[in-house]
Length: 505
Image 1 (cartoon, rainbow, N blue to C red):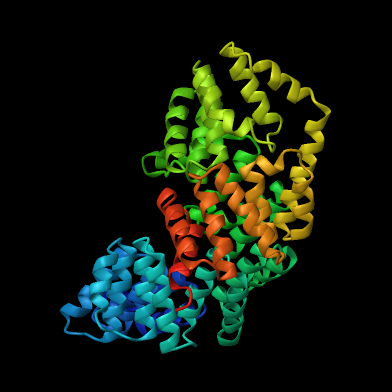
Image 2 (cartoon, helix red, strand yellow):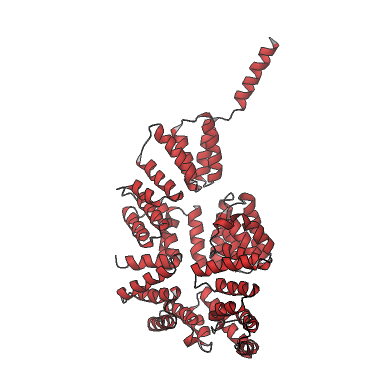
């Protein structure tokens, strides 16, 4: 009798301690509405433990998984729903989104079929972006906005696309629409901050990101954005403290890892860089910031051969990247290949923008190769003009960052020999374009292209000037396509190619 009573009591206690699935589902709904998707997933999974066939719970789980970028999990959940006999147009769109997350963009386009809703057009744009077809992506975004100009997710993706394309006036309009549709939503605050950052309006950007961090304390993105701003302002220690806060929320979040690596690199903490990335070496893009930081860490830690191979791949994939070129030359010199190092660094040391680092590396390579150019390089390093030119170059670059276009033109124009330096001329073309000096912008851009006709950045600038001015469409398209072919991974060029193809449509 006593044993039966004890068993009954334990069963009653277990029943009482079991979480109420309805309460957990409500908690999941609230977390989802608050954009705390990790908490929403935990809560809805708990509810499904007690009510595994509940359709509404499964749909919420799938939506949450999509928000978290878990394409495999969402696909599994959606498959279970289909096996239970549930189907809808929304479910098909969710399957398409899961396919995109799983790297199956063409399958996503097939799933969307003839769906003409704004949501379907948004997903088509995402699929085309995944397929590196920026013109088709922009066309899909515009078609979606024609179907529903107030679809929040679509307007958000359109704003991000415009920011990537550096079409800031149009992006500002899209951000204003986001503010009307969801003034306190995370994506509104983050996109407004992103645009302000690109415009050099750092106090406004900080205000947006801080509001996002305060409103969404469980989300990593506002913290990493604030850390990036602190880094831009030279506050590396403050940035690291913010990243540490973000790491407590999500230590393996890609943005947390990226900033950990970046800040460690800036402080010369190469062992932290190596330890953070060593498990990712097989999947690192060598031209990415992390890829090159890892290669530099190997170089600084005494593995120059390995570093040379990584930097060689980076420069092959991104031939305009001056950092990849500089570091490859340094690695080549470290392994004793001075002659090759000299050839690699020469485009940088020949430039009127060359600073002490470029000239010193070129000098060391020339001396090791016993090349007579060492004397000229030594003289340039010791010239009193070097510091003055570096100050002018620094002032010009700082003016570009804060978008003071006349100041940028003045600073770069004071550098002796700028009229025969493609890099300087391209920067002057941008400053002239943004300050409304159409003829000067075209002259600078075309002269830069004449000096370096196979440079993707020069091709892009010559095309961009024509695109912004609405002139010479055929030439503009040809130049933009050539730039994209030479640097297909460049997101800015891809976005501007999309604008070019769709110009006037």
